[in-house]
Length: 408
Image (cartoon, rainbow, N blue to C red; front, side, top):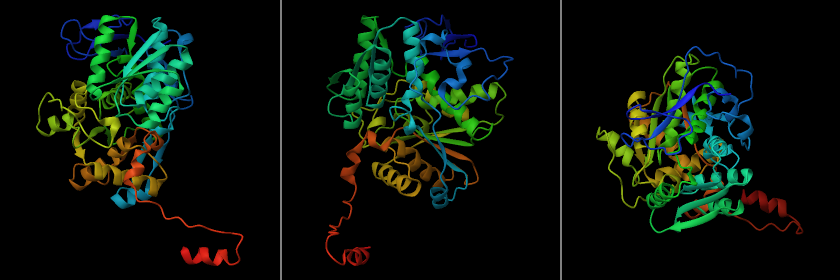
């Protein structure tokens, strides 16, 4: 059983019952979030294996019978020594979320959100997506025998992600326009047809799963929080959920230090970074955002209020990187550390390099970069890479080894 929890408005703190399925505040229209009672709690999960459900007591599912899992979480925290030497960092780590069941961090949230959907007796799942959310929702819906509908921007979703959606039997609806138009379709559908259950990051139960990334990092570095966390930002659910996770571990007394949150966006899809740089308390949405990093090609992020607060409270910042910097970082991480990530994931590495050069991050600090999805999610980057050298080797001919050695 979980510890006691409720739903509260992120903006005005109005409290709602936990079984509510409308996730906008009735008073101010703000987003709702799950709040746990963390007072005077013992820590029962210390000796459990690393995974999302290790932290069962602070995940909001009331009945274990509804828990649906594909064994998500427990992803590697990789000490990147070769890349770190290049950047002048001794304590550089990558939390590689591409190791999750469907290849992205979305699985952390989906295991909790699908479990809650079953508990609430919901049968029809729906989301808007640039690819990873749809792929994850399709898999978890298939596992649970639920109907799954996904709205995606027509012609703008990586083929690998679309294949995942299709193979798991989800229904795909292509929307003319970008992600924000797909999100509008979901919002209108769920407001008119209550049997459709929204699974985007406005769903507070999904974000509860995503906060476990913070828990795992603290456990992996032996009860401390990192000095710096750098991660890509699209719709903003992940950075805000992870900050919530760090705060909960701090309130429980598991960690004593606070992490500075660094959000990285693509130059032409950067409403949050723009607001942070201008010291504004709200964003200006971007029409028709563009970037090779399709997973963060979002102009009007749903969770912008949570992101701005997370960055401000943590004394962090947000910055932008170019597509060229993203692709260079993707190749560097793969070539130096053997970690192949999709372009959006590499934004964290590109952003780290920029923040080091500007002095925002000190090279003595312990830095964790979050890479959010596996490289095979989006193979379109092959178009930007030089053609590999290749040689025809006829091993039936004498002297082929000598000719091979001359070519090396």
